[in-house]
Image (cartoon, rainbow, N blue to C red; front, side):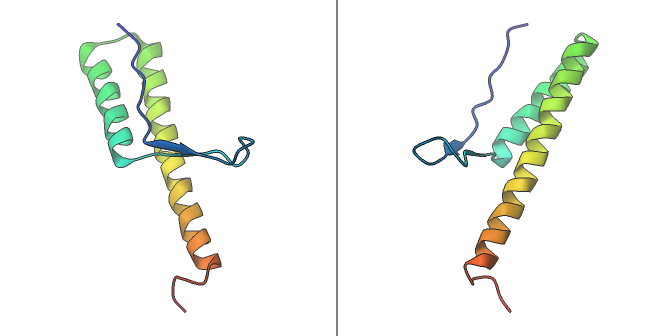
Length: 82
């Protein structure tokens, strides 16, 4: 089976590459889940299924972190309520 590369929505960072941020979209997560589901349905090797599941979970975690960072940044800038 040919390796598939996820097309993450965007990467943002300063000129020196510090504070690099990769924005993970809902579409990225859905695509990773489809890859994992397909591997399970196709009876792919256990290592591949585990790797795809790990990728899927990491994307979910990265998006959760990005949401938390955005929330904290919004609160720190004074926009976000009482």
